[in-house]
Length: 280
Ligand code: AMP
Ligand code: ZN
Ligand code: FE
Ligand code: FE
Image (cartoon, rainbow, N blue to C red; front, side, top):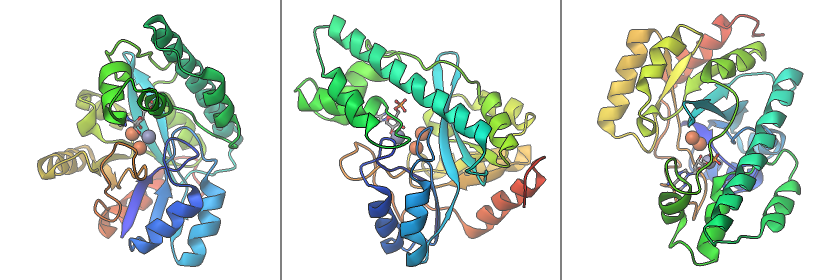
C-alpha cells in the first residue's frame, strides 16, 4: 500500500516520526511520503526509522499557499531535500506561521480569551524545523474550556470566516509550483473537495501543476471519481493518502484505509522526469 499524505509532531501531527514509521509499517504501507506543513524537518528521522521496517519514504511536503485570503494546500514530492532555495522558502513560510498564530492569539485576547503565548511558541521552538499551526491554538482552547474539542474550536474561533481567523500571507499556488519545480520536485493540488476552489486547477495545470490529490479521507467515492476524471481530462496524475495526524487530532483516522493505487503512483513518479530541471 502507498500513502503519500502523513503528518508528524514536526508540524501539527500527534505522532513523532519514529512512532509514525512503526504505525505505517504495521498498517502494511510500503511506500509513503511525510507531508508535514511547510517543513521537511521530520524526513531524516522518518527515513531512519522506516527504512529498516521495509518502508520507502519519498521526499514530501504540504505547503500552504494563499488565494483571495484563503489557504490552498499544495503537496510537493520527489524534490531534493537539500535544495537551499527551498529551505529558505520554507523558513519564511514557518515565520509567517508564527506571525499568524500570534495575531490569532491577539484576536482571541480581544474577545477576552487569554492563552499562554510564550509557552506555546517556546514549546514550538524546541523542535528543529517545527511548523506551528492553528491546531496548537485549538488544543489550548480545548484545555482552557473554551471549546468542546478540536473541531469545535476551529468551527467557533479559527476557521476561515470565524472571529479569530487571520489569513496567511505570501505565496500563490503558482509560486509553490515554481519553487518545488526548481528543487526537482512536482506538485499535487491537495484535497480539492475540502476547498471549493476547483476553478484554480485548470489554470494551474497550464502553469506546471503535476497532479490532483484524488484519494483523501474527506473525499467520498463520487469526489474521488470526479477528481480522477478531472485529472485525466487535464493530463494530470493523481496522488492520495490518509492525511494522518494521529490519535485525538480531531481528524478522521484513515491510515491504511485511504491509499494510492500502484498504477497511479507510477504515473505520478513519471511526471517527475518530465519536470524541467529535475534529476532522475
Ligand atoms: P494551519 O496550518 O495553521 O492553517 O492549520 C491547518 C490545519 O489544521 C489543517 O492542516 C488540519 O490539520 C487542521 N484543521 C483544519 N481544520 C480543522 C478542523 N475543523 N478540525 C480539526 N483540525 C482542523
Ligand atoms: Zn495538519
Ligand atoms: Fe491539508
Ligand atoms: Fe495534510
